[in-house]
Length: 111
Figure 1 (cartoon, helix red, strand yellow):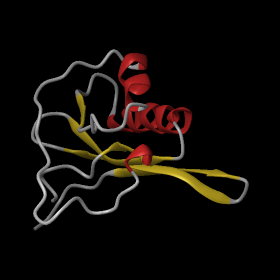
Figure 2 (cartoon, helix red, strand yellow; figure 1 turned 60 degrees about the vertical axis):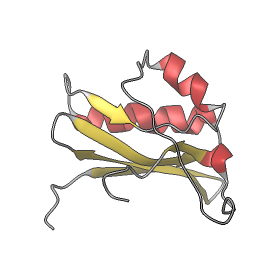
Figure 3 (cartoon, helix red, strand yellow; figure 1 turned 120 degrees about the vertical axis):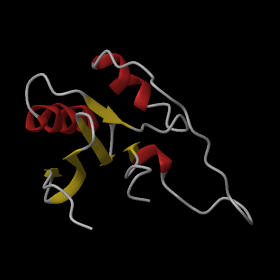
């Protein structure tokens, strides 16, 4: 499947990766995901850059997990509104994951 090109940004602190994110065009506007960061300040800076890369006036979507309470800071700082909700379901227990670093999932469309 051919996908339109997107933009990726990364943040380095003290010589190590502190976060990264990707934005790509979607059917309407642009979609951010993944957005992974050590903290909400890095996530907010990356999201600002990704929104700028999408272009002025472009509607930008991001699937933020409710399980990460630090994502509230990002939502409030960008005056985001919820358009839909999903539920994540697991078979045979929840796998180990570092949800505190997940500010935007890779997107449901990509799996």
